Length: 250
Image 1 (cartoon, rainbow, N blue to C red):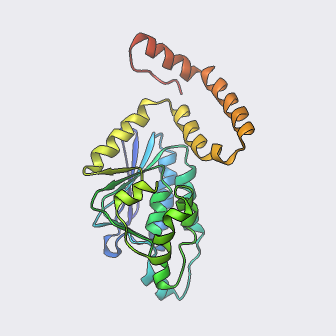
Image 2 (tube, rainbow, N blue to C red):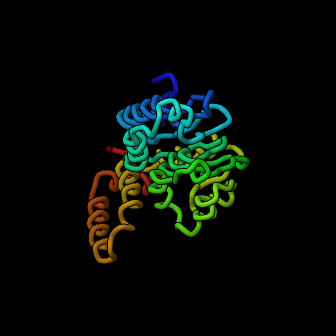
Image 3 (tube, rainbow, N blue to C red):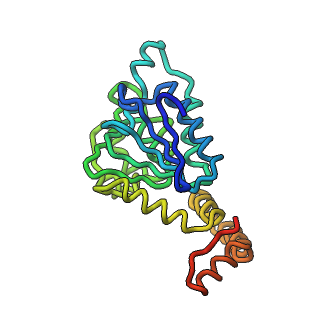
């Protein structure tokens, strides 16, 4: 795929790997560009899920500060925003597989995924205030998962926190001593569902909380009726009755 980001597709899973170990997978201009291209390619591949992992001892160290110093200022933030939106908006479930330290912008990258599986020894820190900036862009995906009061101390002080705390506030979904096995089990669960049903469920998880109650019931009733009347539901219920695995027409 590229020099800093790899894409491999196998068993209906697109696995994207950050491999810029010389700077702890920092968000350089090149890495962000290659990551955006890899997510696009994964979405067009026919895969059922996207897994974002890494090589080396860090998942992502955040902004590439050396590059910013050499370039003399803040770069165009739009490519990074697009990457976060790609992960959030893809109809495919996105899973972060985190087996190393995560700092600053790396936490935003992780938080933009639907599911986040973290090795139990990983540490996190939102260190922006310690270099005179704020976690501005990444607060968008972070605050959709975590209430402001629960992440305030980490954002205001830059202090480290651990996976149990991250899970307790909703920033991550799984803590595991075998990240690969947990991710594989999640992918198997996703692949067991109908593609449209999984995509609609992902959209629903993000969309329904923005609706008032009456609108939510009206729109979700229409969605439920459409899905129950579709070919996927017919196949799913037939497979349930016949005690076999469904073969999804979509």
